Image 1 (cartoon, rainbow, N blue to C red):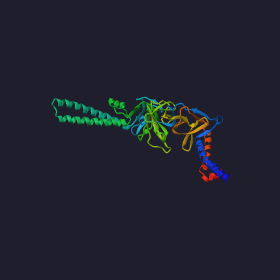
Image 2 (cartoon, rainbow, N blue to C red; image 1 turned 180 degrees about the vertical axis):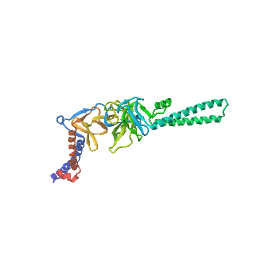
Image 3 (cartoon, rainbow, N blue to C red; image 1 turned 90 degrees about the vertical axis):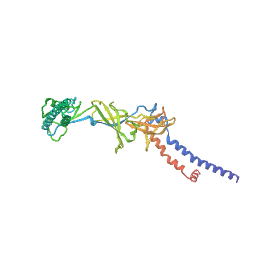
Image 4 (tube, rainbow, N blue to C red; image 1 turned 30 degrees about the vertical axis):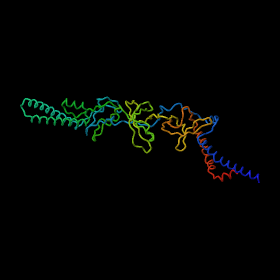
Amino acid sequence: MNISFFVLPARRWLMAAAWVSLSITPTVALAARTSSIPISDQQIRNLGIETIQLDTTAASASGRYPAQIVLPPHQEYRLGAPDNSLVQQVLVLENQPVNIGDPLLVISSQNLGELSLALIENHSRWKLAQQNLERDQELLNEGIIPSRRLEESKANERDARAALAQARSALTAAGVDDKGIEGLIRQGKASNTLTLRAPVAGIVTGLIAKPGWRNNDGLPLLHLVKREQLWVDVQIPANQAGLWPSATLFQLADGTEATLLNLSPVTSAAQTRVLRGLIENPPAHLLPGSYQQALLPLSKDHTWDLPLSAIARRGAQAYVFVRTDTGFDALPIEVAASGGQRALVSGALQSGAEIAAVGVVALKAAWLSHLDSEPASAAVDNQAPETRLAGAR
Protein backbone atom coordinates (compact mmCIF):
# COMPACT_ATOMS: atom_id res chain seq x y z
CA MET A 1 0.00 0.00 0.00
CA ASN A 2 2.80 2.39 0.74
CA ILE A 3 4.37 1.65 -2.60
CA SER A 4 1.16 2.31 -4.51
CA PHE A 5 0.62 5.47 -2.49
CA PHE A 6 3.92 6.92 -3.70
CA VAL A 7 3.70 5.63 -7.30
CA LEU A 8 0.31 7.14 -8.00
CA PRO A 9 1.28 10.75 -7.32
CA ALA A 10 4.47 10.29 -9.37
CA ARG A 11 2.41 9.02 -12.29
CA ARG A 12 0.03 11.93 -11.99
CA TRP A 13 3.00 14.31 -11.87
CA LEU A 14 4.44 12.84 -15.06
CA MET A 15 1.05 13.12 -16.76
CA ALA A 16 0.75 16.77 -15.74
CA ALA A 17 4.27 17.49 -16.97
CA ALA A 18 3.42 15.89 -20.30
CA TRP A 19 0.28 18.00 -20.54
CA VAL A 20 2.24 21.19 -19.87
CA SER A 21 4.86 20.20 -22.46
CA LEU A 22 2.20 19.52 -25.08
CA SER A 23 0.41 22.75 -24.36
CA ILE A 24 3.45 25.05 -24.43
CA THR A 25 6.11 23.58 -26.72
CA PRO A 26 4.05 23.53 -29.98
CA THR A 27 3.12 27.17 -29.50
CA VAL A 28 6.74 28.20 -29.15
CA ALA A 29 7.73 26.11 -32.15
CA LEU A 30 4.83 27.57 -34.13
CA ALA A 31 6.00 31.10 -33.46
CA ALA A 32 9.51 30.18 -34.52
CA ARG A 33 8.36 28.46 -37.72
CA THR A 34 6.13 31.40 -38.60
CA SER A 35 9.08 33.77 -39.11
CA SER A 36 12.22 31.59 -39.37
CA ILE A 37 13.33 29.19 -42.08
CA PRO A 38 16.24 26.94 -40.99
CA ILE A 39 18.39 26.29 -44.03
CA SER A 40 22.06 25.38 -44.37
CA ASP A 41 24.66 27.06 -46.52
CA GLN A 42 24.81 23.98 -48.75
CA GLN A 43 21.04 24.11 -49.28
CA ILE A 44 21.28 27.81 -50.11
CA ARG A 45 23.85 27.03 -52.80
CA ASN A 46 21.83 24.10 -54.14
CA LEU A 47 18.69 26.23 -54.44
CA GLY A 48 20.57 29.04 -56.18
CA ILE A 49 19.60 31.61 -53.55
CA GLU A 50 21.46 34.92 -53.85
CA THR A 51 21.31 37.91 -51.52
CA ILE A 52 21.83 41.66 -51.77
CA GLN A 53 23.03 43.93 -48.99
CA LEU A 54 21.15 47.01 -47.82
CA ASP A 55 23.74 49.76 -47.66
CA THR A 56 21.73 52.96 -47.26
CA THR A 57 18.14 54.10 -47.45
CA ALA A 58 16.85 54.81 -50.92
CA ALA A 59 17.70 58.30 -52.06
CA SER A 60 17.10 58.32 -55.80
CA ALA A 61 14.97 55.29 -56.60
CA SER A 62 12.56 55.67 -59.48
CA GLY A 63 9.72 53.67 -60.95
CA ARG A 64 8.68 53.31 -64.58
CA TYR A 65 5.11 54.13 -65.57
CA PRO A 66 3.39 54.23 -68.98
CA ALA A 67 2.96 57.72 -70.42
CA GLN A 68 1.65 59.42 -73.54
CA ILE A 69 2.78 62.68 -75.14
CA VAL A 70 -0.09 65.18 -75.51
CA LEU A 71 -0.26 68.46 -77.41
CA PRO A 72 -1.61 71.35 -75.27
CA PRO A 73 -4.61 73.05 -76.91
CA HIS A 74 -2.91 76.46 -76.89
CA GLN A 75 -0.07 75.05 -79.01
CA GLU A 76 -2.30 74.18 -81.99
CA TYR A 77 -3.55 76.57 -84.69
CA ARG A 78 -6.19 75.89 -87.31
CA LEU A 79 -6.24 78.20 -90.31
CA GLY A 80 -9.55 78.68 -92.08
CA ALA A 81 -10.98 80.71 -94.96
CA PRO A 82 -14.29 82.39 -95.84
CA ASP A 83 -17.15 80.21 -96.99
CA ASN A 84 -17.17 79.27 -100.66
CA SER A 85 -13.48 80.08 -101.01
CA LEU A 86 -11.27 78.36 -103.59
CA VAL A 87 -7.75 77.06 -102.89
CA GLN A 88 -5.50 78.27 -105.70
CA GLN A 89 -2.07 77.22 -104.41
CA VAL A 90 -0.61 75.09 -101.63
CA LEU A 91 2.83 76.41 -100.74
CA VAL A 92 3.84 73.94 -97.99
CA LEU A 93 4.03 70.21 -97.40
CA GLU A 94 2.65 68.15 -94.54
CA ASN A 95 5.10 67.82 -91.60
CA GLN A 96 7.09 70.78 -92.94
CA PRO A 97 8.50 73.24 -90.36
CA VAL A 98 7.66 76.88 -91.02
CA ASN A 99 8.66 80.21 -89.53
CA ILE A 100 6.36 83.01 -88.52
CA GLY A 101 5.11 84.89 -91.61
CA ASP A 102 5.90 82.12 -94.11
CA PRO A 103 3.27 81.80 -96.90
CA LEU A 104 1.12 78.70 -96.59
CA LEU A 105 -1.86 78.89 -98.96
CA VAL A 106 -3.25 81.16 -101.66
CA ILE A 107 -7.05 81.30 -101.75
CA SER A 108 -9.70 83.34 -103.57
CA SER A 109 -13.25 84.17 -102.55
CA GLN A 110 -16.01 86.58 -103.50
CA ASN A 111 -16.72 87.07 -99.80
CA LEU A 112 -13.11 88.01 -99.31
CA GLY A 113 -13.47 90.76 -101.92
CA GLU A 114 -16.54 92.10 -100.15
CA LEU A 115 -14.80 92.05 -96.76
CA SER A 116 -11.71 93.81 -98.08
CA LEU A 117 -13.88 96.46 -99.77
CA ALA A 118 -15.72 97.05 -96.47
CA LEU A 119 -12.37 97.46 -94.73
CA ILE A 120 -11.14 100.07 -97.21
CA GLU A 121 -14.42 102.04 -97.12
CA ASN A 122 -14.62 102.05 -93.31
CA HIS A 123 -10.98 103.08 -93.03
CA SER A 124 -11.64 106.01 -95.38
CA ARG A 125 -14.68 107.10 -93.34
CA TRP A 126 -12.71 106.91 -90.12
CA LYS A 127 -9.86 109.01 -91.55
CA LEU A 128 -12.38 111.62 -92.72
CA ALA A 129 -14.17 111.63 -89.33
CA GLN A 130 -10.81 112.02 -87.60
CA GLN A 131 -9.88 115.01 -89.80
CA ASN A 132 -13.28 116.65 -89.16
CA LEU A 133 -12.81 116.20 -85.42
CA GLU A 134 -9.38 117.87 -85.49
CA ARG A 135 -10.69 120.78 -87.58
CA ASP A 136 -13.73 121.34 -85.33
CA GLN A 137 -11.49 121.29 -82.28
CA GLU A 138 -9.44 124.16 -83.77
CA LEU A 139 -12.58 126.10 -84.76
CA LEU A 140 -13.99 125.74 -81.25
CA ASN A 141 -10.74 127.00 -79.76
CA GLU A 142 -11.05 130.11 -81.98
CA GLY A 143 -14.70 130.60 -80.95
CA ILE A 144 -16.06 130.13 -84.44
CA ILE A 145 -18.35 127.08 -83.78
CA PRO A 146 -20.39 126.08 -80.73
CA SER A 147 -19.35 123.15 -78.52
CA ARG A 148 -22.32 121.13 -79.76
CA ARG A 149 -20.70 120.89 -83.20
CA LEU A 150 -17.56 119.44 -81.63
CA GLU A 151 -19.56 116.79 -79.72
CA GLU A 152 -21.19 115.70 -82.98
CA SER A 153 -17.78 115.32 -84.60
CA LYS A 154 -16.58 113.22 -81.66
CA ALA A 155 -19.62 110.93 -82.00
CA ASN A 156 -19.03 110.53 -85.77
CA GLU A 157 -15.38 109.62 -85.16
CA ARG A 158 -16.34 106.98 -82.56
CA ASP A 159 -18.90 105.42 -84.91
CA ALA A 160 -16.42 105.31 -87.79
CA ARG A 161 -13.73 103.77 -85.55
CA ALA A 162 -16.15 101.06 -84.37
CA ALA A 163 -17.14 100.22 -87.96
CA LEU A 164 -13.49 99.96 -88.93
CA ALA A 165 -12.78 97.63 -86.00
CA GLN A 166 -15.67 95.41 -87.07
CA ALA A 167 -14.37 95.26 -90.65
CA ARG A 168 -10.91 94.29 -89.38
CA SER A 169 -12.41 91.57 -87.17
CA ALA A 170 -14.32 90.11 -90.11
CA LEU A 171 -11.13 89.84 -92.14
CA THR A 172 -9.25 88.34 -89.19
CA ALA A 173 -11.95 85.69 -88.83
CA ALA A 174 -11.58 84.99 -92.56
CA GLY A 175 -7.88 84.22 -92.06
CA VAL A 176 -6.23 87.53 -92.94
CA ASP A 177 -3.46 88.48 -90.52
CA ASP A 178 -2.60 92.01 -89.39
CA LYS A 179 0.09 92.31 -92.04
CA GLY A 180 -2.41 91.47 -94.79
CA ILE A 181 -4.97 93.90 -93.41
CA GLU A 182 -2.42 96.72 -93.32
CA GLY A 183 -1.45 95.88 -96.91
CA LEU A 184 -5.07 96.22 -98.07
CA ILE A 185 -5.39 99.58 -96.33
CA ARG A 186 -2.10 100.82 -97.74
CA GLN A 187 -2.93 99.77 -101.31
CA GLY A 188 -6.55 100.90 -101.03
CA LYS A 189 -7.59 98.19 -103.45
CA ALA A 190 -10.04 95.37 -102.73
CA SER A 191 -8.90 91.87 -103.69
CA ASN A 192 -10.51 88.46 -103.95
CA THR A 193 -7.14 86.74 -103.40
CA LEU A 194 -5.52 86.09 -100.03
CA THR A 195 -2.17 84.57 -99.03
CA LEU A 196 -2.47 82.78 -95.70
CA ARG A 197 0.74 83.09 -93.67
CA ALA A 198 1.99 81.24 -90.60
CA PRO A 199 0.98 83.12 -87.42
CA VAL A 200 3.69 81.31 -85.41
CA ALA A 201 6.74 79.15 -86.02
CA GLY A 202 5.75 75.50 -85.98
CA ILE A 203 5.11 72.35 -87.99
CA VAL A 204 2.35 71.70 -90.51
CA THR A 205 0.70 68.58 -89.08
CA GLY A 206 -2.53 68.52 -91.09
CA LEU A 207 -2.97 69.74 -94.65
CA ILE A 208 -6.59 69.37 -95.71
CA ALA A 209 -6.60 71.83 -98.60
CA LYS A 210 -5.65 70.79 -102.13
CA PRO A 211 -5.36 72.99 -105.24
CA GLY A 212 -8.82 73.51 -106.71
CA TRP A 213 -10.56 72.50 -103.47
CA ARG A 214 -13.55 74.68 -102.58
CA ASN A 215 -14.41 75.18 -98.94
CA ASN A 216 -18.19 75.28 -98.67
CA ASP A 217 -18.51 74.36 -94.99
CA GLY A 218 -16.03 76.72 -93.35
CA LEU A 219 -13.66 73.85 -92.46
CA PRO A 220 -10.06 74.54 -91.42
CA LEU A 221 -7.65 74.25 -94.32
CA LEU A 222 -4.47 73.61 -92.38
CA HIS A 223 -3.28 72.59 -88.90
CA LEU A 224 -0.16 74.19 -87.49
CA VAL A 225 1.52 72.96 -84.30
CA LYS A 226 3.75 75.08 -82.14
CA ARG A 227 6.37 72.92 -80.39
CA GLU A 228 7.47 75.14 -77.53
CA GLN A 229 5.66 72.97 -74.97
CA LEU A 230 4.22 69.46 -74.70
CA TRP A 231 2.31 67.61 -72.01
CA VAL A 232 3.01 64.09 -70.81
CA ASP A 233 0.16 62.12 -69.22
CA VAL A 234 1.44 59.40 -66.88
CA GLN A 235 -0.77 56.52 -65.69
CA ILE A 236 -0.05 55.80 -62.02
CA PRO A 237 -1.78 53.48 -59.50
CA ALA A 238 -4.46 55.34 -57.58
CA ASN A 239 -2.97 54.35 -54.22
CA GLN A 240 0.32 56.06 -55.12
CA ALA A 241 -1.23 59.41 -56.00
CA GLY A 242 0.10 61.19 -52.92
CA LEU A 243 3.78 60.38 -53.49
CA TRP A 244 4.53 63.28 -55.83
CA PRO A 245 3.72 66.92 -54.95
CA SER A 246 3.23 69.65 -57.53
CA ALA A 247 6.37 70.85 -59.36
CA THR A 248 8.13 67.48 -58.88
CA LEU A 249 10.83 66.99 -61.53
CA PHE A 250 10.95 63.67 -63.37
CA GLN A 251 12.30 62.22 -66.60
CA LEU A 252 11.20 60.15 -69.55
CA ALA A 253 13.11 57.03 -70.51
CA ASP A 254 14.98 58.98 -73.22
CA GLY A 255 16.22 61.57 -70.69
CA THR A 256 13.69 64.32 -71.48
CA GLU A 257 12.87 66.33 -68.34
CA ALA A 258 9.33 67.23 -67.26
CA THR A 259 7.71 69.11 -64.39
CA LEU A 260 4.59 67.85 -62.65
CA LEU A 261 1.61 70.15 -63.28
CA ASN A 262 -1.38 68.43 -61.70
CA LEU A 263 -3.09 65.16 -60.85
CA SER A 264 -6.47 64.13 -62.19
CA PRO A 265 -9.19 64.04 -59.50
CA VAL A 266 -10.87 61.02 -61.10
CA THR A 267 -9.91 57.36 -60.70
CA SER A 268 -10.42 55.17 -63.77
CA ALA A 269 -12.03 51.75 -63.84
CA ALA A 270 -8.52 50.27 -63.85
CA GLN A 271 -7.82 52.05 -60.53
CA THR A 272 -5.33 54.45 -62.09
CA ARG A 273 -5.03 58.22 -62.13
CA VAL A 274 -3.39 60.56 -64.63
CA LEU A 275 -0.42 62.62 -63.57
CA ARG A 276 0.24 65.45 -66.06
CA GLY A 277 3.71 66.89 -66.62
CA LEU A 278 4.98 69.82 -68.69
CA ILE A 279 7.88 69.50 -71.15
CA GLU A 280 9.57 72.76 -72.14
CA ASN A 281 11.33 72.91 -75.55
CA PRO A 282 10.85 69.19 -76.30
CA PRO A 283 13.30 67.38 -78.61
CA ALA A 284 12.33 66.89 -82.25
CA HIS A 285 11.77 63.14 -81.92
CA LEU A 286 9.11 63.59 -79.22
CA LEU A 287 5.82 63.71 -81.11
CA PRO A 288 2.26 64.20 -79.81
CA GLY A 289 0.41 60.89 -79.52
CA SER A 290 3.56 58.81 -79.04
CA TYR A 291 4.00 56.55 -76.02
CA GLN A 292 6.89 56.76 -73.59
CA GLN A 293 7.94 55.55 -70.15
CA ALA A 294 8.07 58.04 -67.30
CA LEU A 295 10.63 57.64 -64.50
CA LEU A 296 9.07 59.04 -61.33
CA PRO A 297 11.22 59.43 -58.21
CA LEU A 298 10.21 57.05 -55.44
CA SER A 299 12.52 58.36 -52.73
CA LYS A 300 10.93 58.64 -49.30
CA ASP A 301 12.24 58.77 -45.73
CA HIS A 302 12.80 55.40 -43.99
CA THR A 303 12.25 53.41 -47.16
CA TRP A 304 14.34 50.96 -49.14
CA ASP A 305 14.76 50.39 -52.85
CA LEU A 306 14.49 46.67 -53.66
CA PRO A 307 14.07 44.57 -56.80
CA LEU A 308 10.61 43.12 -57.21
CA SER A 309 12.17 39.65 -57.26
CA ALA A 310 13.04 40.07 -53.55
CA ILE A 311 9.40 40.46 -52.51
CA ALA A 312 7.13 37.52 -51.69
CA ARG A 313 3.45 37.74 -50.90
CA ARG A 314 1.07 35.72 -48.77
CA GLY A 315 -2.37 37.07 -49.37
CA ALA A 316 -2.26 40.85 -49.21
CA GLN A 317 0.85 40.95 -47.01
CA ALA A 318 4.30 41.40 -48.56
CA TYR A 319 7.46 39.84 -47.11
CA VAL A 320 11.20 39.80 -47.65
CA PHE A 321 13.60 37.10 -46.47
CA VAL A 322 16.44 38.37 -44.26
CA ARG A 323 19.58 36.25 -43.86
CA THR A 324 20.30 34.93 -40.35
CA ASP A 325 22.92 32.64 -38.83
CA THR A 326 20.64 29.62 -39.22
CA GLY A 327 18.78 30.49 -42.42
CA PHE A 328 16.29 33.24 -43.23
CA ASP A 329 13.60 35.21 -41.44
CA ALA A 330 10.38 36.18 -43.24
CA LEU A 331 9.94 39.87 -42.42
CA PRO A 332 6.65 41.68 -43.22
CA ILE A 333 7.00 44.93 -45.19
CA GLU A 334 4.81 47.58 -46.80
CA VAL A 335 5.22 48.39 -50.49
CA ALA A 336 5.09 52.19 -50.76
CA ALA A 337 5.42 52.29 -54.55
CA SER A 338 6.54 50.13 -57.43
CA GLY A 339 7.40 50.60 -61.05
CA GLY A 340 9.23 48.53 -63.62
CA GLN A 341 11.36 45.95 -61.79
CA ARG A 342 11.90 48.03 -58.62
CA ALA A 343 9.83 48.77 -55.53
CA LEU A 344 10.08 51.15 -52.61
CA VAL A 345 9.33 49.37 -49.33
CA SER A 346 9.21 50.24 -45.65
CA GLY A 347 9.63 47.96 -42.66
CA ALA A 348 11.96 46.91 -39.85
CA LEU A 349 14.99 46.63 -42.13
CA GLN A 350 18.48 47.69 -41.12
CA SER A 351 21.46 48.88 -43.09
CA GLY A 352 23.82 45.97 -43.79
CA ALA A 353 21.11 43.32 -43.73
CA GLU A 354 21.26 40.67 -46.45
CA ILE A 355 18.03 40.23 -48.39
CA ALA A 356 17.29 37.28 -50.64
CA ALA A 357 16.92 38.60 -54.20
CA VAL A 358 17.28 35.41 -56.28
CA GLY A 359 15.66 32.09 -55.44
CA VAL A 360 12.89 33.70 -53.41
CA VAL A 361 10.36 31.26 -54.85
CA ALA A 362 12.22 28.33 -53.29
CA LEU A 363 12.44 30.16 -49.97
CA LYS A 364 8.74 30.93 -50.04
CA ALA A 365 7.95 27.26 -50.70
CA ALA A 366 10.06 26.23 -47.69
CA TRP A 367 8.40 28.88 -45.57
CA LEU A 368 4.90 27.82 -46.58
CA SER A 369 5.73 24.20 -45.79
CA HIS A 370 6.37 25.31 -42.20
CA LEU A 371 3.11 27.24 -42.18
CA ASP A 372 1.22 24.25 -43.57
CA SER A 373 2.29 22.23 -40.51
CA GLU A 374 0.68 24.74 -38.14
CA PRO A 375 -2.86 23.22 -38.12
CA ALA A 376 -1.57 19.87 -36.83
CA SER A 377 0.30 21.51 -33.95
CA ALA A 378 -2.57 23.84 -33.31
CA ALA A 379 -4.97 20.86 -33.21
CA VAL A 380 -2.94 19.25 -30.44
CA ASP A 381 -2.80 22.59 -28.69
CA ASN A 382 -6.56 22.98 -28.80
CA GLN A 383 -7.37 19.51 -27.43
CA ALA A 384 -9.16 19.21 -24.10
CA PRO A 385 -6.86 18.38 -21.17
CA GLU A 386 -8.52 14.99 -20.74
CA THR A 387 -7.85 14.06 -24.36
CA ARG A 388 -4.20 15.12 -24.16
CA LEU A 389 -3.79 13.13 -20.94
CA ALA A 390 -5.30 10.10 -22.60
CA GLY A 391 -2.87 10.50 -25.45
CA ALA A 392 -0.01 10.78 -22.96
CA ARG A 393 -1.01 7.46 -21.44
